[in-house]
Length: 306
Image (tube, one colour):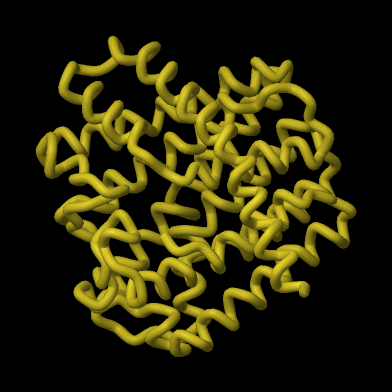
């Protein structure tokens, strides 16, 4: 009975989030239109191709619902879109030949396959200041002060940089061909995947001017959700097809990466993901952050099929 209630909650939430994904997509389109003149035509086209590719918009949805769970009442879609810009940039660079060298992303050719490695590299770099500018403008649009908007930009950039997403990506590259223990594997993915998911919910709380204990609770929720999301990705890489994933299946094995299924087995990896989700939800409950949608998004992270 509990299982079916959870399944129904996840399904209902995913249906409801389709409206928010559409709103985030519209905000990304506006951003492309507003900033196209800031780049050379080829780079602008590559940025547009990357930002408007079909995606889950999970990070943006997490930000929106953290914002609402902490009492935010305005439209934070533009801030959610800024986080999605960072995510899109990370995918462009992650797919480059010097990184994971992938040809398919979100069911279509990767940016460097369409526009060249040089243009894809430049487009990814261009999206970093674009995200910072968009985040600052969005925060001011929510009536936050310059200081509060600046704190949001710093938090986003710190999570995206050497101490977060980029640092995790570097550790991941250095670990190819090596067998890692669980602690080292999770250190990689706390940065590579977890940092941006964690910052998404943190920014939602900060934008709502939540008290420090709620910001920290949402940070703990996001950090554990990020690891669980990566475990699900690792499992799907060995259990799903390229068509189901929208990206090339089996890349982890081809690149000789250490993964959760290789370390723990598929069943063990799923158990670890479930345990992380329970820790994530406990963090919310202890801080009295009540959101059925955040709970459902956490369940979705480990129960999804793509």
